[in-house]
Length: 547
Image (cartoon, rainbow, N blue to C red; front, side):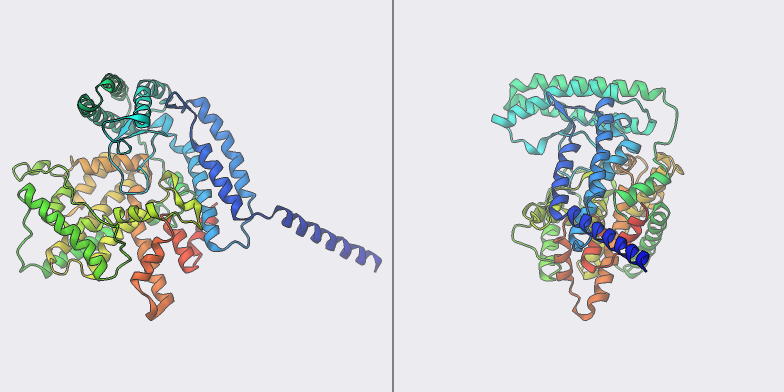
């Protein structure tokens, strides 16, 4: 009896000790916020005289120190936290996994010449630039001309750093893949043209900076020549990351509940559905005249302006979601391609010249960016900045792609039946290029085969095999695995969430309340938004179980 009492006493003491240890090690939400902010500073490379350090030594040091951050993350106890705070924990975990994947698999600093971008000229329609690139790239939308004061100093420092950066890049790029280097050559050709135009512009506003820009352009030209020389002797190999790595990346970084095979099936199904829907639309509309292409820049400008106004007015009148007064879309047409040069028209241009409205719905991107500038997410500071490694892709691109059909189904195109056909053509194109993304990374297709497939699978022959759009897309998807498929499986996740919420709320479901709630969660992985809004944890459990 005495022995039993001693055993029970020992168990009780052990239990109390464990309980005390847990209380002592208990963490709260402030701990994950603090760790997140530390990690964000850690991710930034050392910058010496405007040049970020991506040398082998610097990357090895970062790789070793990353493990300590991951250990600190695992030590954080989230038990008892509300779902919204657990979501933020998973965001931080995904970012750390993203850096791990960069070191283990992607290694853009040693594999990808496009990583060493020296200048970018346009604002992306998503939270951050698509694909990996160096820290602190010269981003022209940040500058006002004529350059003066601190802006001029910063510009001068970055443009002076270009030759040194590219000299470092030549030493860092020790892993040579034929396709990645091909896209690097294309990028450098584009940068040469941009720097040439910038030199002319500065001649009028800041002539003292022209020699620096010209020197940077010469360095880019020399780097391009080096890439071409190296590329010519490379063997044809696949630069895809393989199914196993792809699946790990989807689960641990992008928090996607679909593996490679499941994404293939989703994209194939959407490709088939879009073709079927298009054919049925054509039957429905066969007695209607075809859409006429815009045949002048003035007509296109007027069409775009009308489409922008139509789209935003529809959102307000149908009460799709709250549209504050600050939200607007500008009717910018870019470069107009006249009818006599049809071969120069890219796929999206052809769609737009038939009717501007379907593609404007994809521009919900820009409305969302305007909202996010004013939405600091005070309860969720981790969501107040764009997530690293394009972790937001399923949410951002999935929304924009899904919204095209949301607008179609809610009646935006009812008075323009032929324009409904364009929505299904757009979906077919996105599903076809998504399959190319997946098949290139599995090693089943070459980039050329992926491009050829997309051209054949896109209706009406509107996508040509030499279209700059599809080649640019495939270059991005090779560098950023799964970005192409995120448009399609992200769309499916949006539809799943609407269905889940409709089932939960029944007759009380309201699309306006749904989207306002959806937008309030920030631009984070779709699986996390679903968990937070519905309380359904099946997707995140599937993701976590894969670890």
